[in-house]
Amino acid sequence: MLTIQEMFETIKMVQKENLDIRTITMGISLRDCAHSDVKIACRKIYDKITKLAKNLVSVGEDLEREFGIPIVNKRISVTPLALLAEASETESYLEFAHALDSAAEAVGVNFIGGFSALVHKGFTNGDRKLLDAIPQALVETKRVCASVNVATTKAGINMDAVWRMGQIVKETAERTAERDGVGCAKLVVFANVPEDNPFMAGAFHGVGEAECVINTGVSGPGAVRSAVAKVVGTDFGTLSEAIKKTAFKITRMGELVGRAAAERLQVPFGIVDVSLAPTPKVGDSVAEILEAMGLERCGTHGSTAALALLNDAVKKGGAMASSYVGGLSGAFIPVSEDAGMIRAVQDGALTLEKLEAMTCVCSVGLDMIALPGSTSAETIAAIIADEVAIGVINQKTTAVRLIPAPGKDVGDFVEFGGLLGRAPVMATNVFSSADFVCRGGRIPAPIHSLRN
Amino acid sequence: MSATGETIVGSRVIVSVLGHDRVGIIAAVANILAESNINILDISQTIIQEFFTMMLIADMGKSKIDLAELKSRLANIGEELGLRIEAQHEDIFRYMHRI
Image 1 (cartoon, rainbow over the protein chains, first blue to last red):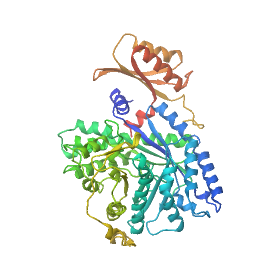
Image 2 (cartoon, chains in turn orange, red):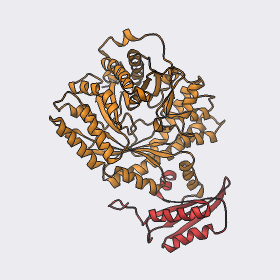
Image 3 (tube, each protein chain N blue to C red):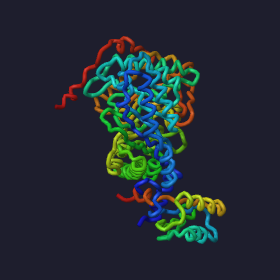
Image 4 (cartoon, rainbow over the protein chains, first blue to last red):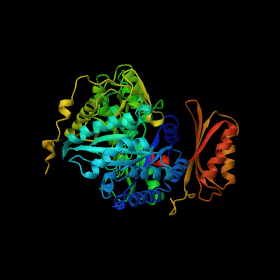
């Protein structure tokens, strides 16, 4: 029988410490929607999504009520669009973006991820067309999220793609200039992209996946911070254990809700993504966890070590809690979505360089970072190149989601609102990287990728 | 879970009461459960960090109402008494604290 302390602990986690299921994401394969006529393909895409995801939102709401745990988002991820759009005889892929957007609106989800291409070894014609469509697609649609994988440990880095993405990020920002470049908040560049990540904006339904799955993303920075605060002054072993135990409990929520959702929707259960994903809400910050560990401000010396401990403990605790752990799984450090990060940047404690170091030991990458609007496409490409190099050499996923905010400079803020939050514009290095990033071709795969 | 995915009336729920102590809390909650044929299996109460806390485990196997209706009635009485009263599926607690 459960003890009253245990029941109280669960209730406290949900009601006071912001424990929630951050997302239930339905992954849908659109591989069978390819057609040479773009209108037919879009029709098939719309029909398949609206059929399979018809009850996603209502099931999410039912589970939320029955279990008493908030399920913040219900979302959809699809096959990287470039793979099926390729079969259609059309020059512009905007129509596909609209099909996704309409379907998402019809079923009531707030984001649909998968306007994506996998170009780590090179471009196909379809890949090029999809990339060309990204800036305008992110202007014209509300719910569509785009992602591009430009590197893997086995393939190396496609620097042509990196350079092209620098341009695309810049163009997307310019086309959404009147909203601080918000289009860029829906665009992610990846190295070693996971096929089953349920979090936006980088979610898509990988090519090795089944027809339809349910993946969940949990989140509980507040619950972890509370656990860390209870063990102030103890040694690292005790600290690690406290985080592990809490991560276990948090992940169990994702497992329970994911299985229940999958059963009710009559769809296989995929994975739980064991990630600590902050929100701008007070008490829901990853930076505050690091500070509770003993750092005066997130970003000071020791932050990388602290984050390494946190990321690892989260994974260990989560691994026991779920039968299938996947996605990104670790600690997220999105600047605009974390009140503690924002404060650290404003206080001068956290710089772009330190964030880059921290990405070596945590799960996402340079996420939701606002840069001066004057940042060149070449510099953006170079920042991407650095981040994907970290991923490729260390055999991990890394990603970049940068917002070069038109008309803004260091000292200004970009305001997106809601879960996307607000971010202080951060400084970049003033020296040029143009001659390097424009060289063309691929950086070869590292020697340790030859594992056979 | 039933095959059709409906809320299972046959499983157990945990009713939690949080708030300031006053006369009649247990009576009020127990009445709502009794009038709908919901059997109380265990009750615990304590004061935790200045909150009066009561948790009870109830079996909805022969309940006349579904979980949504129970939650609604408990929320109403909670509002009258100035307390927070929730009913949740037992699984959420069991999953978190037991392997």
